[in-house]
Length: 186
Image (cartoon, rainbow, N blue to C red; front, side, top):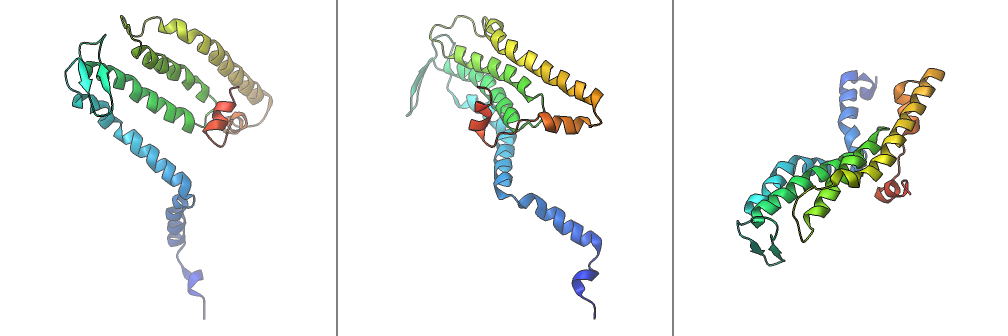
C-alpha cells in the first residue's frame, strides 16, 4: 500500500509552503504589519489638524499652545503636520530600504527636520528661510559618498562577471537595529 503523503498533488504542497512562508518569522511579520498600518493611516493623520480649533491660544489638558507667528492654532498644526507626515514616511523608507543608494534619503530627511525645527522658533517671520544653506553640509557629505559607491559598483561591473543585484548586495550595509544604522555614520 502506498503512503498518502507521497500521492499529494505538487500544487497543493506548493500552496501550503507559500502560505506559511510569511508567517515563519513572526517578528518581521508583526513589524511589517505595524509599518503598513502606519503608512496606510497617514491620510488620517494628515487630517488631524482639522480637530484643532481656530483660536490663537489652544488649551488642552496636556498643554497650552500659543500660535504667535501664525494666524491661529489650526493653521499652525496644518503646517506642522504637512512636514511631520513626509518626514515620517521618509524615515520609514530610509530604515526599511535595502538598496545601495538609500543614503540619498538623508537629504530630504534633513530638509524636513530643519523645517520642523524652524517651525518651533519663537520669533517666526518666514518659514523655511535659508533652508538650502543649512542643507549644504549634509549634501556635501551624502552626494560624493553616493557617487563614490556608484563609481565603485560600475567599476566592478566592468571588471567582473557579477550582476547588478550581486553588486548591490555586496555594497549593502545591513545593521541589525536602529542603533546599528545610526552608528555606521560615525
